[in-house]
Length: 585
Ligand code: NOJ
Image (cartoon, rainbow, N blue to C red; front, side):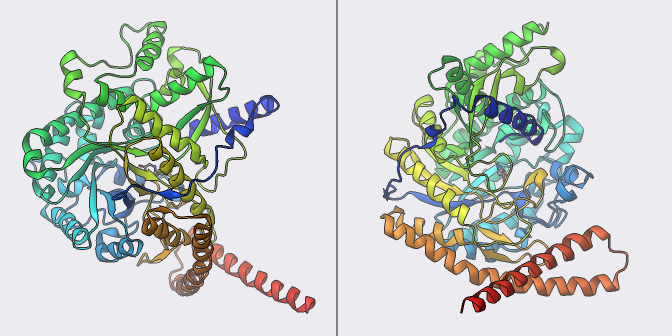
């Protein structure tokens, strides 16, 4: 997904383009066929996901070291509302509760990540191993297996040990390859008897671009035009090394698989008859998913990246390309290091050709691509600014993976939608719609011959959404972050997703409509429960504030005024409704 600053620039552009070309733009292209009733292949795996920093909390407990996200989120002005992941969902203390929720959903698998600094506080294995951290993941894994839920583990979901950032500059430094390999090897040694699905990295695009190019994510560096390419280069090497470690030291005994989870939006040409737009859209996907997938499946970067970045580097008077290159030995070492591909996908863009000047001062990953992104104003966007619901793009992306990389085994590792709302709402009809349509497009892709083996709804719980803090909720379960106990409440989408899982697909229209109706009916009970709990905690907060005059004005506004206004509006609407009904009678 796009970083926020890029999005705002792009939005202005989108609007301008939409206005100027509205007449000759064929919006009806959205009509991408009807719903497909049918079932998934037997044994298809249904799951939900999370990541360590986003859900665990316990940031400084039981010997855990600092991660770059602990430090980044503690700096003022980096995260919405200055939120942090310090306690988040307190998942560290709630293994049993959360596995209970997974059972309720009848999940086949659960995807989570291991926090590197929780196991190795400095990141350097020879310094110290934190046995309490090992114990936590042992308990989580055992509890999942006891409940017949397959764990799918990501080794790196963005939380680099801070010490490695300070001492070496993090992923800018090639030494990360060995440190990461040692960490991975420790995980294989301690957990590999029970874990059969490993993923080295989650969405390295984001690490590189948002961490080292735009600086919106930890470690917050803005090394435009160079940082992201260098970081990605080291990440690809680290991935390959870990795959080889598993292959030579553990595979025969543990019989598991090692993959990587790559994210990618789909890029659709604005004008499907215009060769330049077709090429620009292809470039968009190659610079996104292809940047990592092409070396891993074919041994080198996509030709189009080498051409574009190379040409611009020459124009900028540089002796070599800003895109680093692999030696022949490295190419053959990296090629084929993927037992299965994790695909994270949320949204789509329309793409058109747009030349960017190649001045050195303005060079960046974004301008290197020579394209512009557009959105259809009619696409639903219930939550995050960047996230438009465009189900048909999912099928296209999956088919792209099939044709480009030799039809690899795919696990969808992330797919879902957020909501942005001040008042609490558990009746998430729009999420039901999103899951229904996206999983249906995935089913069509499977019918097209794409080798998708599993699907992971993102996410099990509402959680810390990186630079957006807690303002964007992706969960199937709502988490009341204002309550110290972080209680979870099912949204309507829990009921709906559960039905897809138990039917392994979509039996027929009548039944699927019924699921939806029932899901929306039952959520009103949960809504009432939550509203009552919120009133109770608001009252408790008022009492606390009376006793603590130093509590800030801001806290007062977010913790008291907003919920009180919400509750009052609900009450007033109810009174108004009753009044209307009476008058009608
Ligand atoms: C991808 C990231 O991997 C995940 O952590 C995040 O919550 C989702 N995108 C939604 O933004």
